[in-house]
Length: 154
Image (cartoon, rainbow, N blue to C red):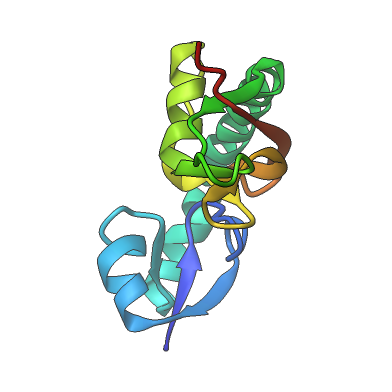
């Protein structure tokens, strides 16, 4: 485990300025190279305090963009018509997953990423309604209902 100082809020980890302990791999492969965190050293603490207002303004801008995007996400209906098995009309021939949900948003002009979509059941394999969450920011999470219907074939 390594201790880092966050330069931006990370979902399920912390907010700007928080000291967090994360695995070496997470720090080395994601947080440090993308500038999302810095090592906790006396020099970095001084630099961070000088740049705190800049980090907080950047974070406020990101939060505002997330709130605007949340309104667009709320306006999208997630309805899928999928093929079902012949012997069991409640089970899907395939499945509906995060990629399918993202494609539905993209078709309607809403920019959502796959890593922001969380379907509690993993992938949907049956007909019905399911709840998923779209985490646009650590403070902005939108709950959406995904409806999966059997595809009516003529």
